[in-house]
Length: 148
Image (cartoon, rainbow, N blue to C red; front, top):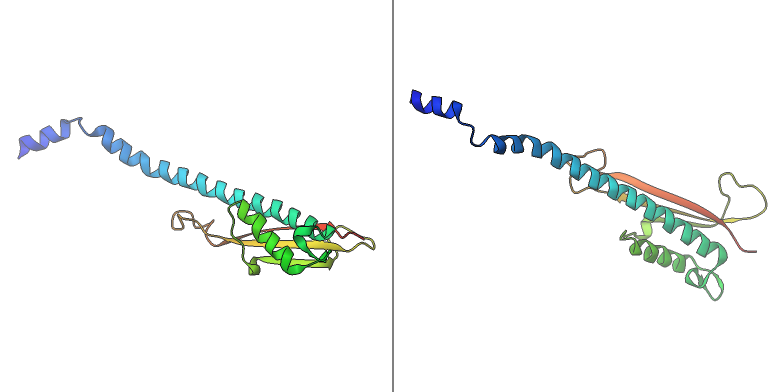
């Protein structure tokens, strides 16, 4: 038995396997963390871009956001869902807030604005490993002056 223990203590085979096992766990955590953080930034950018396009569409009463040449909330909602889906983000009607006659922060005057606010409940695949990202609500809003 003693001879076997001495051989095992002096053996160098398997050292690389042990080192890989020790280093791979933190490496995988970093890789998943970077990927999920990048995905959250992607969704933020998608929401910001979508909110601007939808606010512009509603403000100018473009064909995608209008019915019979006038602003339509249901058409605008449908347009918002379609634009977000192009980015790979699925929005429901509860995630979109539309206002066609509002004032926007930092803007004054007689002009009314179309304001769009989008929210998205971000959930991560690795919730146990990165709890700071799980359950976070990502939001974006944009204003555009209504056409006279």
